[in-house]
Image (cartoon, rainbow, N blue to C red; front, top):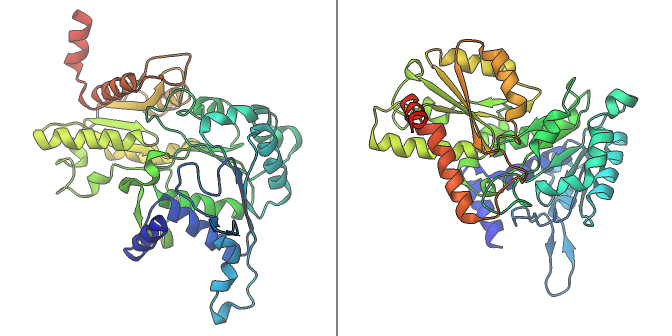
Length: 390
């Protein structure tokens, strides 16, 4: 009850967090006449207790799903409106079976929003055959289209090698010919617009969304309701502080010398560290942090506009939480080289290459995270020279 009351307070305050943005996307699609279907190991509650789309009477065991009863809330002028059906299931712990079924459903019901959600993104490897045989290749092989959305909770919070990585690199390796979209979104408006667009596409394609964990309740993922009502999806998000010089890094676009590109929650870690250091020395140039929300199809035009805006920058950093041989670096570095040419120096910042997607030690995770932020935000050319001499 406390969480539902907090959601109501947030809405009355004119904001939406991740869970509320999702609920509003589902509800508005239902009112548009689209069915919404979601299945996953813990999807009714949400693995991280954020969704609560099904309510259970602890005395009787009776289930109540508010979005299944959305027609009750129609106004008198909407009484004859056709409302979509909401289907929400906790599936068995067999990714291969559950993902395969939802994929098949999505090929028939192209006007419905169909979602399969992993409990953690790491668990998608149990459905790898379905991903390789169907999601990535079915359009080329059989001209079979699907609008399935895969939600893969992804992000490095020190939870260990089975609860950190949805294996972003594997999906990017399978991308070609705009056969699917791969996204790592960071606020509720982006999520809202992506979900609403999916069943309305004239040419359906799967969306692989690396959904957040710690960002689910973070203030940084909240947006004003107006961004849902009047906004749209944006493939690349500029540094939010640059729009407000008074609270931002303290310099304008022409003064920027470093552009830190990243995808996902690590952007907010970098922004927080940058702002902390700027508060100690306001004249330091510690760069801008730009979020690449859509990794494929690669947003060439959006990134080109960013680089033109910060035309005096000398260095572009690709920051990622994953090891260097994983994550998006193996995909984006050639894309960035083609785009940057000789105009910028390109430097990756990541964890060291590893066979495991993450360390199992919380202490080591914290050390690695601090090192990432140092090398992305504070690293100077003289630091590199000193390290070589050492």
